[in-house]
Length: 404
Image (cartoon, rainbow, N blue to C red; front, side):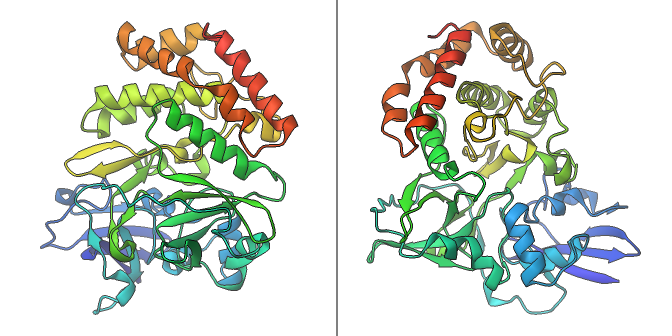
C-alpha cells in the first residue's frame, strides 16, 4: 500500500492511501482543523474511491504543464498518483500531498491564511521580464514542474523583485503566474490582458494583472495568485474548483451545465444571494466578450475568513476571435450552448435560476453599458484585425441585450 500525507497549510490532516487501484483518505483521529475538501467534512472520518479521487485529480496539472511534467519527470499519463507526488508540495489552494514521512520538509513550512488580504501593488514596466519567451515556454521541460496549476496554456511561477523591478521565474512558491501565448494562438496573452481589464471596469473582482514583454519582444500576461500571500508566499488560502466540489474528474469539465453551477453556489457558499448575483455578472460579461470556454475548472470558490465565496475571476478571454468558437458557452443553459438571447440570459438565468430581483439585474446591465469598450479595445496590444473582431462581437451581443 502506498500512502501520502495530506497537509492543510502546514498541518498534517490525514493520509491518502492507494491499494489495488482503490483510494482511501483518512483523517487523523486528533485532527481539528479545516476539512481537506468542503465536501469531505472532518466528522466523516474517511472516504474511499474506486478511481483516482476527483478532489485530488483537480489539483493535477493540465495541458502544456502536464506534458512537460510527463516528459521531464518520466511519468506515465495514467499515473496520477505519481503526478500528485511530483507536484504535491505546491498545489493550488492550501493543500500539500507528500510521501509518508515523519518530518515536515522545508517547502511545507507554510501557514493557513485567515483571510484574503491585498498584496502590495506592483507596477511592472515594459522591461520587467528579462527572459526570452521561449525560455518561459520550455522552462518546465528542463526542470520538472514542482507546482501545479490547471489550464492548457503554458505558464510558470514567478516572484517580483520590487528593488530590481523585474519578475523572476521560480520552480515553486511564486506569488505570480506568467502566461506566454501558445504557439497556436499568438494573441492570447494580449487578449486575456484586455478581457481582464474590461472585467475590472465592469465591477468584477479581478486579481492584479497585466501585460509585460519578454526580452525578445513577445507579450506575456501576468497575474497575481490570490491563493498565496505573505512572506515567501507561504500563507495559503483554500481554493476549490467546480469539478472538485461536484466530485467529477477534470476531464468532465465541459460536461456540466449552468443549472448545476448555480446549485453548487447555493450549497457551498456562505452568502449565496450575493454570490449568485456575482455569478450572474460574470456569466453575462463573458457572454458579451465572446468567452465560450468558461468550463467547470474556471469557476472556483475561495475561503475568505469565515466566508466561502466566489474566487476572484481568472481565465477570461474572448475565445470567439481566438479559435472561431461557435459555442457561446462551455456549459449548457437550458440544454444548449449557443443561440442565447436576452430572454434566456436575463429572464431565465438572472431572474429564474439565480433568483435576482429586477433591480439587481438592471444593475448588472447598467455596469456593462458603462464600460468604455471602444477605448479599452483600441488601446490594447491586440492587432488591428483582432481589435476589430473583438469590438464587433461586443457590439453585436450588447445589441442583443438591448444595451447597444
